[in-house]
Length: 582
Image (cartoon, rainbow, N blue to C red; front, top):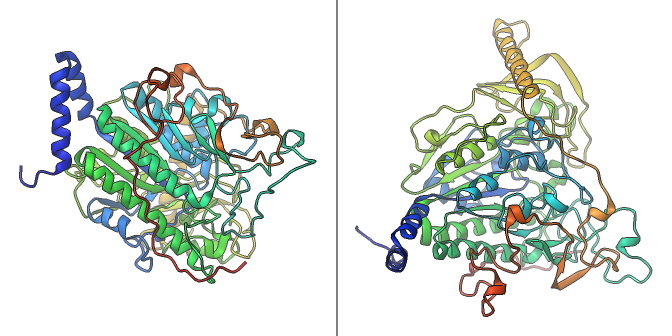
């Protein structure tokens, strides 16, 4: 084989040692597990379709994503399953819309519930078939008791339990309005004396333990990089396939790029975008070194940019939602306009996914669940309906066939959370309700019902500016089809095994490692979060391990608890060095 790499030689030597020292049965099992593909899902937060150069040339901060697109497949018509955080992430992990899986709006710091326990996650399905499963980053599907990711199929968790603006920190970064830092000392106040949890410091979890509270956001990318490196490198040693879910804090506010100092706040977003892109490039490089031809890397976003954050939010590209913005409000995050849910997406898998290919197929985050299960030769759960499609043939370049119909749930700008009042049918999109989210230093667009619906032809009008003439034959031909599809969908949900999330909040449910401080301050020591962990779901608890499939440390007294020699060298992208103003 021409150009045999050092990584391949090492892998061959490792396999040879396995065959030599183990029985034929164990060696056969090891060979079978090595044939299973690895999966790395990278989910950016609040990223716009136009925040990737390959999509929108005026964006120049994403060379690594651009290179991944050149070497893989770029999706032009890919959509988040909701236009806000928790519902979108729930759909990624279940392949089901919020009206089925029960998650229709975001969970709070004090939420006692989360993704309903009778919902099956992608991690649970893969883990049952021998995969090592890990999540690095933001969870936001319930952190209290059984809703913690360690009880939802993940062997390892390192990250924040919800968005990075849902708790104070010592270095608040850039946001609108500005966020004050956490109080350092507390004499007369304490968390356990409070009735609310709004001011609890943002915690950093490792498995069931709080490692920092508040977390140092400026170092979070570096910390994530170290853990990601450990997981990818240790997977080679264990011989097990892995599922790594990387849920980034980028590009959600507050923006806290490492080493950024500037008098120009407009540079913050660009520097943060470069930082995210640099991390993604390093993830790809270390994966290529070890598992190149057996690892699918899939990048996308949870919803569109948060327009009310002005210069700290991203670009929707051409999907500006003109009909709405002309009437007030934003047409991005929290809305069902294209800017709210059309997100960048790139898939990379050398030798499997053809290079430098663009697909126009209508696809969704919902498709990740069934597609990965298909690649792992796992059947879909038979007791519930999956809204996603197995798009493996699209990824392999054999098909341009995606969804005929997609439903975009109400996500906060108008209507009841989760209701399906915006429908995509092929090139057409119908709105039974419209409304704009908070605009940059502006207003909220009024909610308005439409019966008959507004219908746009996205192939001719991606800006959603002028709806079809309701007196035309084309309009009524499309409207009748959309009405029939909507009726069938609602009937399917009514007949399905659906769930209902518990959105009750209690102050005691907030993560807290030090109840004697007003914001639960602690740092540098391992503090239990009080989260219950299900031994059936997670097996023995393994503290301080960085994504390793190793024996319990109790049985390995000399086992180190950090991934020495397996750290991904974090390199902050170039940024300006002028003094930052207050």
